[in-house]
Length: 148
Image: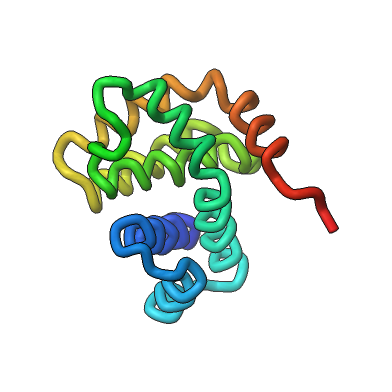
């Protein structure tokens, strides 16, 4: 498995556990990284994804909810909503990853961890959000604390 895909997998597993069991994010992520050792750049990427999603979850959720209105977000499967959050954060904030790659990686995570309908659902929601990625990035940056 590619290293960045493995980092996304670790991040998704951590987000899932944090979302459903409400465990401490730092401990969950540390445990996941001990279970699946990654080269430091990939571990840094996984941390960036997890903490970015957690810090900006309200913004991400608002955009997801707007583009999946038939399902209240709390009724969307936990794995599906965390795949969407993770991919949307990467889509908006990582200029090194093209939107096609971010969506494809999310679809692959959906195939690995979700239900039969997850890949199509994830692809549809993220595809609808692609035109808004700069707007989402701006909202996230406005919400970020100032640099030290």
